[in-house]
Length: 346
Image (cartoon, rainbow, N blue to C red; front, side, top):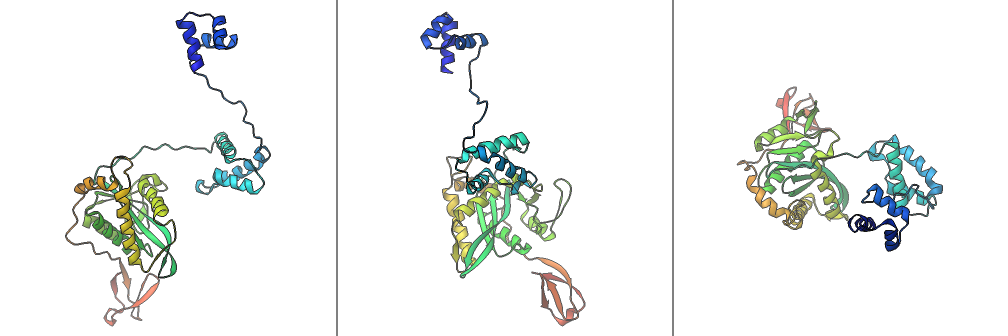
């Protein structure tokens, strides 16, 4: 670009001829003539053919692996890194970049390199929170356990909250919400969810959902709206999806050991507070998450005088053996209820 600029200035500004310019800049006449006559101001070199000195003998094998993946769901397709490692095991001695470049070129030619466009979502203070589950392996009382982490994230301030449970039943979802609202000191106007079976009873057209009756009672008690994402559209609650990765990499990078679930939840709450106090806000980069949350807290809905009673309620019939069935177990009840339909709360 600098050479083109100097040639154009010498000819059009200083009035020099082609022969004088070629002598001054040590260029060929054809190059100078092309710059002057075509009016180009920029020029890029594009390689007509990409050489593959080390990948050449493996191109056929790499193409076979890529063809195998075309019929699979996107999440099950192998990345360029995995393909590179597989070729290494088969004797490939070249670098990763050569594999990555070829994979990108192959996908563009095949039409499988689809790129989706997204519009960033912005939220007003106190507008919404997002909820999701994650699964982490810990030791509780010396026993390896996979715990379920209920994750909340305020969309404006990015304030996180996590609570651990052994299962994902409805009463645990309700309990997690009560803990989160008490932790935040208020409630947002909307809650954004995946289509969890414990929350969404039926998925209808578009955004219409039939929500669980008890879950609607919770929303009515705390005065927030329920919003369910489009199926397979994780970007609609991308903040909490991102938080799942942050929590996994920061909090559970190594196997954690706790005496009990209560101790784990105390530790999780402390980690959430530490993260909020030290992490920089992704949009307001001169402030921390807690500093933005301090402004948002005044916009949250006030908590009701008493917390929600987070039980799960089912209608069951008492058997002649004075038993009721719940969650694949049977429990005895008073003899006065035999043969009757009763309300069971867990």
